[in-house]
Image 1 (cartoon, one colour):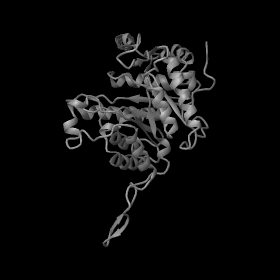
Image 2 (tube, one colour):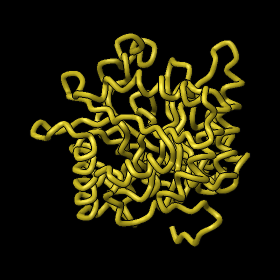
Image 3 (cartoon, one colour):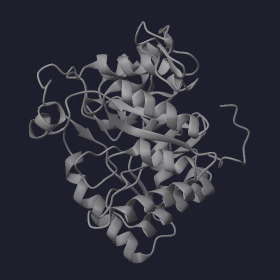
Image 4 (cartoon, one colour):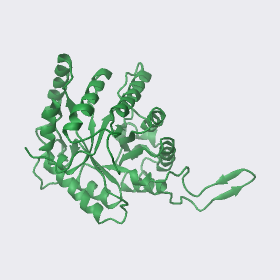
Length: 352
């Protein structure tokens, strides 16, 4: 069986934070309790998806702020925040504020592009500037500069008796710029992320180049290697260029028979989309990994993409119940993680 050349160093999980629209508070509380459990189990990170006009977390920054006050160690991230919905200056203020409240534990994951189903919401989102908005990499470059502390205007200083003005976004959180991630699905975006000083989030959805064979694991490996090559040559990279893989992983070691049946139905329903590239861009989906921790570990060790990383943020299935997430996270931390060479935070010396 092929094995990764190094043990898994950081174990994280990703959740959509699903809620019932009739009782949204309960769903948000469930997400916070899952993050608290993750810290107790020794996970290194918890990541939140960003969903607009859906029944998942629409304001992960607010949820991270709440989670930062209920945890003390676990890193908190977004995977990803689509910047087409955001004002970069206001987002920079919010991210820096939450990072300070969290003691430097925030890992913002970002993406660019036109908002999903833009035609249905553009007149409400940007009523005065629909035709002027720039959804390219420029948008994330602006955010990164602001988070780094680059001046945004030529005016600063005192006005009147008590008003003090800054020429940069405030508050400033040192180190946050180095913890920005980019969610890349193509070789082009992976290379851009490496060249521009972002860490790389590689998920279970990718886009192959036209000349690539439609093998998910090998395409993902190729993108990660292209990212690392670009990062190594970039003057914008300060410190190690980090890469995290985010597959859907469902260990069943301690699951009940009814849970295993439910999990298998979920996987079976999603499997057909993995058989061939989808749509005009050839979108590829990774198969969900389900089984005992030993079975999943064997599949991961043989996965060309996994062999390139020492960090993961395993994605939790969208539509499961709170008790299911408790079981899955517990199995990840107590059985699957150790099978991949990982040790829970607090039980290891980790210079990073």
